[in-house]
Image (cartoon, rainbow over all chains, first blue to last red; front, side, top):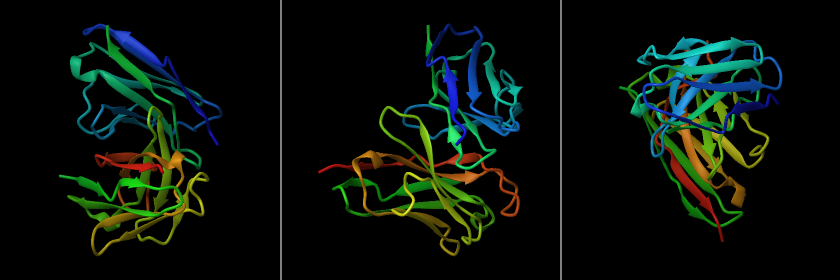
Length: 107
Length: 124
């Protein structure tokens, strides 16, 4: 099983600033890596797939980067609606696995 | 507009059974693989099961293998999860999710739409 580890667990950032979230895989994901945003009481929302491709309707302030085992989600000019939980997911090997999540909080 | 609406959750005693449903609309249900993903209290997301667009292929996580069974009825646009021999550590919000691939022959294995989830609590 590919173990996904996200850091930090909690990130406090002021509106308007940049947030950088990390995701590390225990082995290569061959760039089969997605990011989701999840807010309490809502459905998870696909942000990024294929490491860096934004899903439909996702603002350009969200960007993904990385390769093999190290990945980053960057959110520029944070807005109030961006706060919540963020998960990475590998879809290279079964079982599909998620990171434990990073909670993005308002500073 | 894609909609996935789960139902069937509730409080159930250990070792009992429960069947979850997910009603799909707004897309060609029979053309996409579908998944169940769960989130235990205070925990992250965990993939539970996947079923191919035509229902012929199914895979389950080791944690539920032999106890849970995913199925679908393409004539009713509905996804199911039959959960038997439930344990307290199965307590979670269960989400159904749609494969993001363009069609059933080309699944992506990530999820572009999710339902709101249904809560399953296993407790005596």
